[in-house]
Image 1 (tube, helix red, strand yellow):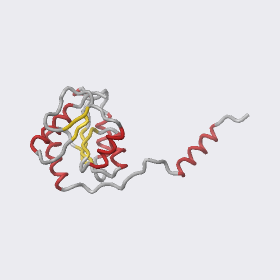
Image 2 (tube, rainbow, N blue to C red):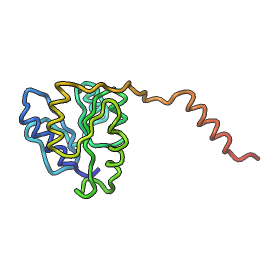
Image 3 (cartoon, rainbow, N blue to C red):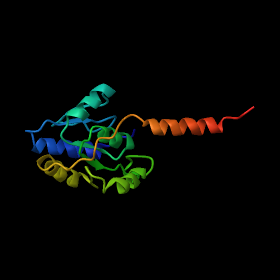
Image 4 (tube, rainbow, N blue to C red):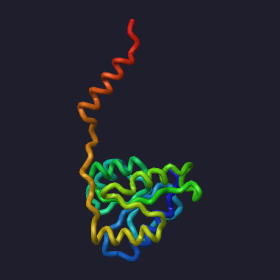
Amino acid sequence: MLPFDRLVEAVDEWARDNSDHDVFIQIGEGAYEPRNASFARIMPMADYRERLRLCDLFVAHVGMGAILQALEESKQMLLMPRQQTLGEHTTDHQLHSAARFKHRTGIKIVDDGDELKREIGRLIAAPLTTADRISDQSSPELIAHVAQFLDSARPRH
Protein backbone atom coordinates (compact mmCIF):
# COMPACT_ATOMS: atom_id res chain seq x y z
CA MET A 1 0.00 0.00 0.00
CA LEU A 2 1.20 3.50 -0.71
CA PRO A 3 2.21 5.66 2.28
CA PHE A 4 -0.42 7.74 4.07
CA ASP A 5 1.85 10.22 5.84
CA ARG A 6 -0.91 12.86 5.93
CA LEU A 7 -2.95 10.70 8.33
CA VAL A 8 0.05 9.49 10.34
CA GLU A 9 1.35 13.03 10.86
CA ALA A 10 -2.07 14.34 11.94
CA VAL A 11 -2.49 11.54 14.50
CA ASP A 12 1.05 12.10 15.77
CA GLU A 13 0.37 15.83 16.19
CA TRP A 14 -2.78 14.99 18.15
CA ALA A 15 -0.72 12.63 20.34
CA ARG A 16 1.77 15.47 20.98
CA ASP A 17 -1.02 17.71 22.26
CA ASN A 18 -2.77 14.93 24.22
CA SER A 19 0.01 13.03 25.95
CA ASP A 20 -2.41 11.66 28.56
CA HIS A 21 -3.80 9.30 25.88
CA ASP A 22 -2.10 6.13 24.64
CA VAL A 23 -1.77 6.35 20.85
CA PHE A 24 -0.42 3.62 18.58
CA ILE A 25 -0.06 3.95 14.80
CA GLN A 26 0.67 1.36 12.13
CA ILE A 27 2.51 3.49 9.57
CA GLY A 28 3.38 1.15 6.72
CA GLU A 29 6.18 2.30 4.41
CA GLY A 30 5.66 6.03 4.87
CA ALA A 31 8.51 8.50 5.24
CA TYR A 32 7.04 10.20 8.31
CA GLU A 33 7.90 8.47 11.60
CA PRO A 34 5.88 9.54 14.64
CA ARG A 35 7.72 11.34 17.43
CA ASN A 36 4.84 11.47 19.91
CA ALA A 37 3.08 8.13 19.50
CA SER A 38 4.20 4.52 19.57
CA PHE A 39 4.26 2.94 16.13
CA ALA A 40 5.09 -0.07 14.00
CA ARG A 41 5.51 -0.19 10.27
CA ILE A 42 3.63 -3.46 9.96
CA MET A 43 2.43 -5.68 12.78
CA PRO A 44 1.30 -9.30 12.79
CA MET A 45 -2.43 -9.71 12.22
CA ALA A 46 -2.97 -11.15 15.72
CA ASP A 47 -1.39 -8.05 17.29
CA TYR A 48 -3.38 -5.76 15.00
CA ARG A 49 -6.66 -7.49 15.88
CA GLU A 50 -5.87 -7.31 19.62
CA ARG A 51 -5.11 -3.58 19.43
CA LEU A 52 -8.33 -3.08 17.47
CA ARG A 53 -10.30 -5.03 20.06
CA LEU A 54 -8.93 -2.91 22.92
CA CYS A 55 -9.01 0.57 21.36
CA ASP A 56 -11.51 3.31 22.20
CA LEU A 57 -11.32 4.90 18.76
CA PHE A 58 -10.15 3.34 15.50
CA VAL A 59 -8.57 5.91 13.16
CA ALA A 60 -7.80 4.68 9.64
CA HIS A 61 -8.02 5.20 5.91
CA VAL A 62 -11.29 4.35 4.16
CA GLY A 63 -10.22 0.82 3.22
CA MET A 64 -12.83 -1.91 3.14
CA GLY A 65 -10.64 -4.30 5.14
CA ALA A 66 -10.20 -1.74 7.91
CA ILE A 67 -13.92 -0.91 7.95
CA LEU A 68 -15.03 -4.56 8.05
CA GLN A 69 -12.55 -5.46 10.79
CA ALA A 70 -13.71 -2.52 12.92
CA LEU A 71 -17.36 -3.49 12.34
CA GLU A 72 -16.53 -7.02 13.51
CA GLU A 73 -15.40 -5.45 16.80
CA SER A 74 -18.23 -2.87 16.89
CA LYS A 75 -15.71 -0.01 17.14
CA GLN A 76 -16.35 3.64 16.48
CA MET A 77 -14.33 4.76 13.46
CA LEU A 78 -12.76 8.00 12.36
CA LEU A 79 -11.77 7.63 8.72
CA MET A 80 -9.93 9.78 6.21
CA PRO A 81 -9.83 8.77 2.54
CA ARG A 82 -6.59 8.45 0.66
CA GLN A 83 -6.49 10.69 -2.41
CA GLN A 84 -4.99 9.87 -5.77
CA THR A 85 -4.06 13.50 -6.45
CA LEU A 86 -1.87 13.49 -3.32
CA GLY A 87 -0.11 10.25 -4.34
CA GLU A 88 -1.79 8.27 -1.55
CA HIS A 89 -3.45 5.72 -3.83
CA THR A 90 -3.66 4.74 -7.49
CA THR A 91 -7.39 5.64 -7.75
CA ASP A 92 -9.92 7.72 -5.84
CA HIS A 93 -12.09 4.76 -4.89
CA GLN A 94 -11.72 5.66 -1.18
CA LEU A 95 -13.59 8.91 -1.86
CA HIS A 96 -16.45 6.83 -3.25
CA SER A 97 -16.31 4.48 -0.25
CA ALA A 98 -16.34 7.50 2.07
CA ALA A 99 -19.51 8.79 0.38
CA ARG A 100 -21.08 5.36 0.80
CA PHE A 101 -20.23 5.01 4.52
CA LYS A 102 -20.51 8.61 5.76
CA HIS A 103 -24.04 8.11 7.13
CA ARG A 104 -23.42 4.73 8.75
CA THR A 105 -23.77 4.53 12.51
CA GLY A 106 -20.43 4.62 14.29
CA ILE A 107 -18.42 6.10 11.41
CA LYS A 108 -17.17 9.68 11.05
CA ILE A 109 -15.47 10.64 7.79
CA VAL A 110 -13.10 13.63 7.61
CA ASP A 111 -11.35 15.25 4.67
CA ASP A 112 -8.10 16.56 6.13
CA GLY A 113 -5.64 16.39 9.01
CA ASP A 114 -6.97 19.43 10.89
CA GLU A 115 -10.48 18.02 10.93
CA LEU A 116 -9.08 14.62 11.94
CA LYS A 117 -7.29 16.13 14.96
CA ARG A 118 -10.45 17.98 16.07
CA GLU A 119 -12.59 14.87 15.76
CA ILE A 120 -10.21 12.53 17.66
CA GLY A 121 -10.65 14.52 20.86
CA ARG A 122 -14.37 14.97 20.33
CA LEU A 123 -14.98 11.26 19.73
CA ILE A 124 -12.93 10.18 22.74
CA ALA A 125 -14.91 12.57 24.95
CA ALA A 126 -18.30 11.73 23.41
CA PRO A 127 -18.11 8.38 21.55
CA LEU A 128 -20.35 7.68 18.62
CA THR A 129 -23.06 5.11 18.96
CA THR A 130 -21.60 2.11 17.16
CA ALA A 131 -23.31 -0.28 14.83
CA ASP A 132 -24.06 -3.79 15.93
CA ARG A 133 -21.12 -6.12 15.61
CA ILE A 134 -21.00 -7.96 12.32
CA SER A 135 -19.93 -11.57 12.13
CA ASP A 136 -16.71 -12.68 10.50
CA GLN A 137 -18.50 -15.88 9.43
CA SER A 138 -20.89 -16.38 6.52
CA SER A 139 -24.43 -17.32 7.42
CA PRO A 140 -25.56 -20.91 6.74
CA GLU A 141 -28.17 -19.49 4.34
CA LEU A 142 -25.52 -17.71 2.28
CA ILE A 143 -23.34 -20.82 2.14
CA ALA A 144 -26.32 -22.92 1.04
CA HIS A 145 -27.21 -20.42 -1.72
CA VAL A 146 -23.63 -20.29 -3.00
CA ALA A 147 -23.42 -24.11 -2.97
CA GLN A 148 -26.73 -24.33 -4.85
CA PHE A 149 -25.53 -21.79 -7.42
CA LEU A 150 -22.23 -23.59 -7.93
CA ASP A 151 -24.02 -26.92 -8.26
CA SER A 152 -26.42 -25.48 -10.86
CA ALA A 153 -23.51 -24.05 -12.88
CA ARG A 154 -21.63 -27.35 -13.00
CA PRO A 155 -21.62 -28.97 -16.47
CA ARG A 156 -23.79 -32.11 -16.61
CA HIS A 157 -22.67 -35.15 -18.60
